[in-house]
Image (cartoon, rainbow, N blue to C red; front, side):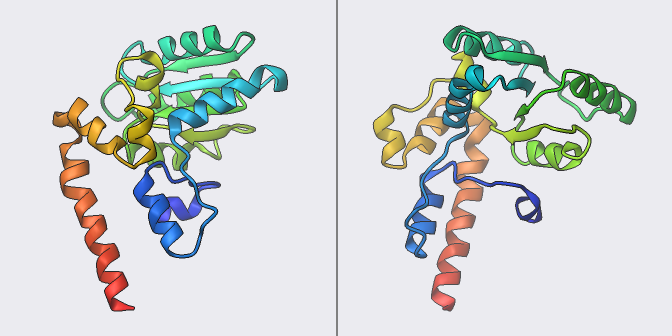
Length: 195
């Protein structure tokens, strides 16, 4: 939670968060999924000459995502890509990778790691990559390469994208949706009853 308080911007990626905010009087709150945010910023970027760096994903995914977005949005500037190994980088490795990112002078660094890994990475690097905005978008890397299919729009609209994702990747996501989500709902219910 402290990570989110230090972030420059936090957007609700799931409809349950939107519904919760709206139930508390914040009727202006709407959903902003990471995949949609990537699309909209990349659409605007050629005209604004924004340079994008893609950090994360499985091997080859960041490269394929960058290529797919360049094909979709001609003139999109890709500063670089990097897929970290599936382990913590050593201090030396991290310093080397960070220096390479800084050398590309990106305006936006898209971070596609799992939650909360990407939030910790952004916290630790935001002051080390001058002039860049770091945006954590998790599964957007897999959505934009087509490795994982997004839920149909109707499921997204009524708040069932989580069910589609669980059905698509049960081994990876079962804990998030069947353990952590119910804990969140329980905490919200307790808080409401405590008022």
